[in-house]
Length: 185
Image (cartoon, one colour):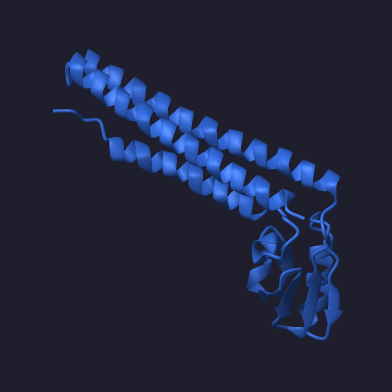
């Protein structure tokens, strides 16, 4: 009886796609996206917490984010945290709300972001190939131990390769979509 689980292999490959999409959400495309402020950490009562735990983030316009801070004493702390996060954004304090304009990207910055997205995509491809390698090793071990026949090994290996090709293609499509989004003026 084969102990190999193709669905588990596919699930692990899907994890690489999910991680890639998460990485891509943090990349600035010139349009406001609440995920841009996800990496910002704010000091609140002596502990570092994510920005979304001290205020509500929204995107009322394509080139503007707003952060509505829940406590008046936190407004300046949040302002400082966004400025120091290294994401190139400068909030404007307006009472308990911070307006964060998203500046348009210049050509050079767009190209840098495309390169960075390429690195993220390559990391996802490597992760998928690592899952494939693990699956192939498991299959070869199962055949060596006599759990599966040589024919089953070939059939399952082909299915693993097919899944790998499919997920790498998804990475390429996701990368192309993100690249188009970044380069769009």
